[in-house]
Image (cartoon, rainbow, N blue to C red; front, side):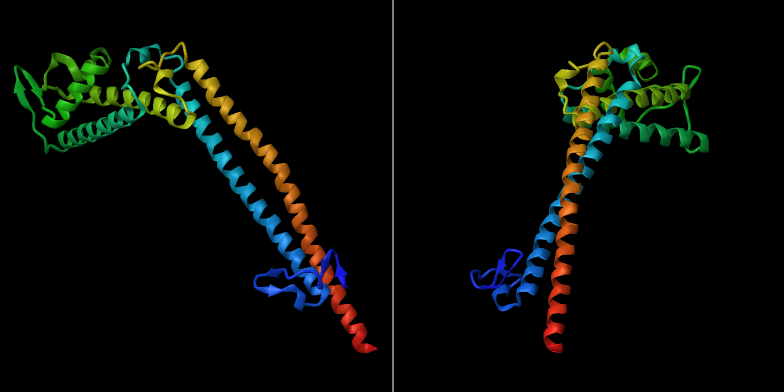
Length: 261
């Protein structure tokens, strides 16, 4: 029976996209089969590209997390923070800080514009935070450590002079940066709260950095392996597309030859 490139009309009922190749010319059947194989290789190549992009994105995230930790490598004061006990608690703390930051910024703007007037406390012009914000910040500073927030906790009351509001905003920004670094290292780097033991311990930052960088290198190594596979699939795709084209040309040439004779 007629057989072209391993495709036999007589011994197969293979259907491709609903087309029974038994009903086709052997050259058309061979061309269609090769196109189907080419499509399979292209689909595999597309998956490899997606996997490589995901690995590349993860490597970037890991290195970004490492960069955040590097910011604190030489800052011994960050070891004074008592961090929340787990990842979700850290994220919740960041939400609390963000709300407080927005409040501080709005108060500073309103003071500048004259919308927020001070009241006298002794001889000083003072301001109060909204009660809900003050309550949240007091609970936070009591737990994290008051010495990390000298302007926010001075007097241990809700009485603030303008310079204390400015200082408190800076204190919030620093603690938020510390939490953000911890979250990035835990969430992106696959680390756990036990890696910090409730603190960003400056003596352990090098090992944490090493872990993040090692994972990023593994992503890059995986991409090199995927690249070899991608090149192989693309090579096969091109070969089968070319083979299909050759089958079509050969069939057309044969048909023309028959018609001329």
